[in-house]
Amino acid sequence: MTGKGLDARFGRLWAATTLSALGSGMATVAAPLYAAARSDDPLVVAAAAGAAWLPWLLFALPGGVLADRLERRRLMVVIDWLRVVALLALGVAMLAGRAGIPLLYAVLFVVNTGEIVFRSASQAMLPTIVPAARLERANGWLGGGTTVAQRMLAGPLGGFLFVLAESLPFLANAGTYALSAVLVALIGGSFRGGGGDAVPTGTRSVRAEIGAGFRFLVGQRLLRVMAVLIGLLNLTLTAAMAVLVLVATERLGLDSVGYGLLFTSLSAGGLLGAVVGDRLIARVGATWTVRVGLLVEAGLHLALAASTSAWLVGSALFAFGVHGALWGIVFHSLRQRLTPSELRGRVGATTLFVAAGGNCAGALLGGVVAGRFGLTAPYWAGFVVALVVAVGTWRVFDRAAVAAAYAGTSSRPAAAPAPVTG
Image (cartoon, rainbow, N blue to C red; front, side, top):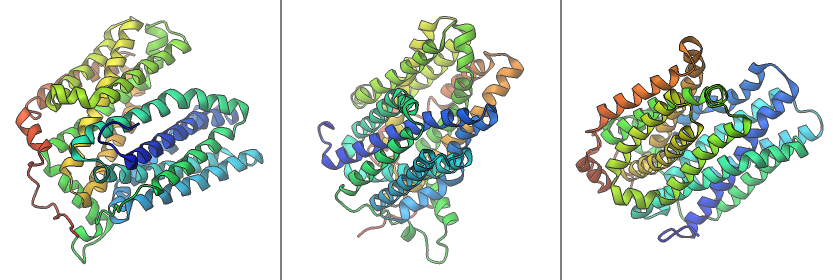
């Protein structure tokens, strides 16, 4: 099922993450519907998204510390069961007619806090389960499963279940987390990161361990540049997507179905990139995958800024979906190759924090820039930023540097702790 070189342990991890993505997607769709059914205040409805995003800024870095200090498989199982309890409490309260919007926000906050730790631990586990030569394929399968479950299936399924009963999407989410916990528990092996042992005695603290992960990331040129790029490009992309509905209706002449099809194009591209990503990257190389991806990013913003053709914009979103999947495969695989086991949770969490910061800032800036300078202003700004970034980082991703990283010969900074053995 999972492709040559990927065994049953990876199959269980893939199934667990895909089920979790399906359940999380259903709850993400149902949460604003539930809030909107009880309030017509846009701020109250939008706060559901805020309750989901805020934990990524508050707990991404401490979550990476947990993923390195504790046995990662057990940590993921505990996180899943805690999320099951929270969602069951919400579902039961809804059935009893006692659930209010504050409880919804609280549960979203808890569930997404758990998602941060779960994802950090999962990404840190992967190189222990998968041979190094198969990391691209494994990351592609994980990305593809998440794309299908969360972006293609969860929306219509979550909406359908919500129509049947408001509690059903949340109870179904609890069920997916329970199945995920069982599957992760069945993964054989030991997955202790040893992060606590990597910090000198007497200075072991959350701050010190976060600092060790941050210093390692900063000391690796390719990882540092890609992390900064992801944060910056997330900012411009989220700003663009925040007002996409207005572009779709006012400039492209689309109705709600057409607007939804734009996201279908994006997801279809992401799925294609996930499926063929490892083979395509092997053929053209990671260097050109990254470089061409930056040009595709610029092209998307240009199409949204200058075109009134729904077909052209849809095609640009499809191409961007492919690019996003390929970039994710390259970045995750490079990070997993270059980062020692005891630091993988923290380094991964640092990149999640940077990405989330870009998303949060972009969501705010998109509406502000469009309101002040016109509807296409966020897209022209994104186009300029993507071009500047492409020119400025073109030589960073040269073949020699990328080949050295894939060979594991990239130098480590002196501040990085030595790997824990035994």
